[in-house]
Length: 361
Image (tube, rainbow, N blue to C red):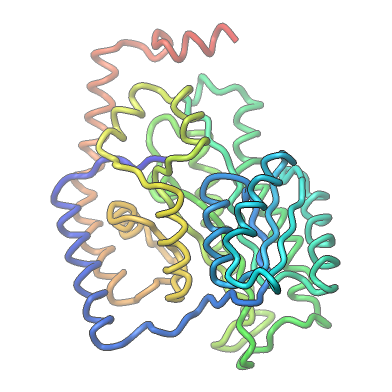
């Protein structure tokens, strides 16, 4: 997905708030503990046959993880698995597997967990990363009801079903989950949202709500897991990644249906490669972050929308939220002005080429 262009002021403020504390922490030697060790652990990655999911899988393979990727297309899965296994740092001991499944089915998520558990010596996986999803940007009235449902199924339910399926064995009273305070690393459940989960823009009215729902689910689980492990050292950690534009095959599909006004609002976004997004996300997980953004503008958008979500750094992120809250007083009206201007210059949305195309289908 893409991130809107923000003013130079917000960029400067983001740099000041993010880089100065980060530099000072590095200088003082803080944050060196790895909160996301994967060597010898089993990781399930949905959407792992291409794009960000594939790059995450390859990166974790270089760190010694056993990888299971999940997607629908068998041929893509086979090709991806070959790439992932060739990235292994310990090819004699690391193991790799793929599962073809439709993640929009709750029964399939149950099957995935069961199959991985059997493959993993009758032990549930240590890490589940929900990276599957799709986006078909259109104006709301150009999207049929089936399209609205598909976007929620693809981007929210595909992750919620798998989270439900994996948390059952992880939180069962007789589970072998890491005990609080034990030397065994906690398990991880990772969602992949979007910066549009912080601030949606025109054209993503079927996609952004699903990504916002993922953030809400993540926040809810963070609190609910305290019932199972009421200590300061959780046995299961939840995190959510919020990328902006990623240059993947999915991005190319987006551009086919994306409204012109959406492209205009996003024209200042430089975008990132899936390799960059994967590297930044894993680095943030290793630092122990919770809501993870992959660029400065994404961090500014997060700062304006922290709400009650747990902070990565209480003082740094709270300061960011104060400053971006003020900046957004100027950004929001500017975005609205651009949309109104576009409407005046181009007429009723029903006359737009993309709307006409939608009507003929």
